[in-house]
Image (tube, one colour):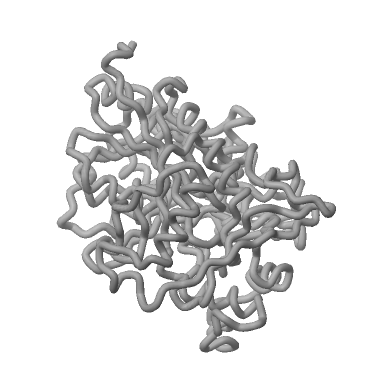
Length: 464
């Protein structure tokens, strides 16, 4: 038991929107200041989300490995995660050979395994939903979590047991029955052969990693007053219970999920660092009050590819009278293309009511504003401060946004001249006025601002 007078706190890094806020860069920046005894843990999710990191001029996308891999800290894949062994092994091969990280990396025995048939279940299920699909990535995440609640999931700790293959085959056959009975999809043995061979080969790699209980590694670090950073995937508005259900992921993406994802009590969790973009993006289906282009944009991003968009809109005007074209320009300027799926991200103006909801829910005591540079080509920045619902102005979030007609109430701000990265370690007055408005409105300090994609494109807080 940790003595209270010796206890440090876990710092959750939480996305405050629908994901893709730049959490990876935030974690990487924090990791650069950590020692080899400090700890970075992933507490939920799987390889259905990508954290993009720019390191020494090169881009990397991490799906399972914590974004602090380029630092010195210990990194841990927590109990609340779902782990695809094949994807994990492939991801380790993308990291430069000069980066020593495998000895620093551990995984929880309680983390759930994603099987080849989980991926089949996910993709087949999504295809049968037609227009009612929720926007799954098809990586097998939901079926993996479903098996946990059905009390039949296989976990990392199981791969060391003698009867693992038999248990694997039993669960695989259950999945095949479901595919046949519920979706009329007959799985051919040849279809699974290569995937199963890769799966079992990857287990050899997984067995080579240090396997340790998440609660133990976290408690040990806190006892020694080391820093513990909990990295979340997706965003708060995709939380399986408190997000915009059913257009959500399958895990708890909020700071409370740190407790269940690591097996530690709430008293171990401190204030979160909340990360949000200077605008909003969303991948997949579901409500989006401030979307530029509205329903037209949602359908376009669902059905079209980036190559077609580039062909049809070679030079989209961010200041066009057509909001749909503005949304295309915002997507192009921010390169808002799914790092994992390649899907077009829907784009829109910042939504204060949703941000306040996420900040309160996560106890976000410090904020990070990312991608402010993307708005440099716009003449004005718009921020939704309130909603109009049934003729009444409110800042409260409806229980089900998809069933309520919402009209955003906007406030506009002038934009600076030139690129933000050209201003160095300072910001132009227009950007500062915008940031100070956000701090006052959101009730929390913005500790740094992202002014470009590279590691050094960051301005630390110097304003009051």
